Image 1 (cartoon, protein in one colour):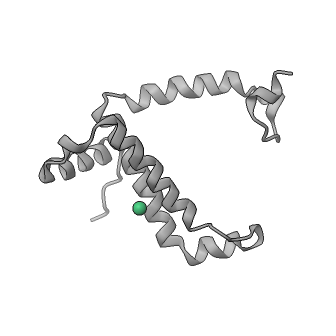
Image 2 (tube, helix red, strand yellow):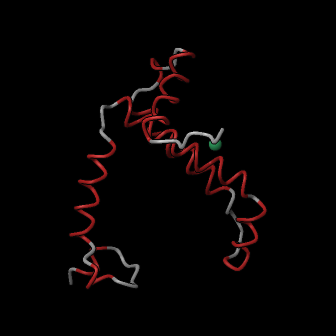
Image 3 (cartoon, rainbow, N blue to C red):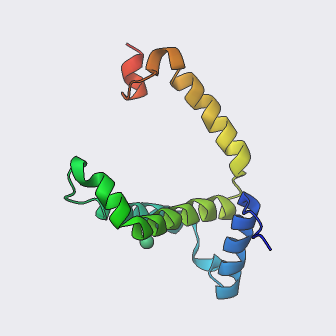
Length: 121
Ligand SMILES: [Mg+2]
């Protein structure tokens, strides 16, 4: 039987159950979850430390599993933060992307990577 596709709701339910089983809700205040996002991001960055741009492709292949795990650690904390703080991910994402559309109009930024403040000049 083909494995059922994961949805955001499945991921959130898995995370909720994982934490309920361990009685960890008590530790998941906004501060510590935000710290979790940053420390896991630092763990991802650490994999790239001292790696020159021309070696990135090889690194991505060599450390695929480790990179994947750190990205999932970040995702876990992002989802957990949203879950514990009543953030509707779908609605919040839509609102933020609508802001980004205004902040980065295609006609101004296409093919450019500067910060939005650079486009206002
Ligand atoms: Mg990690």
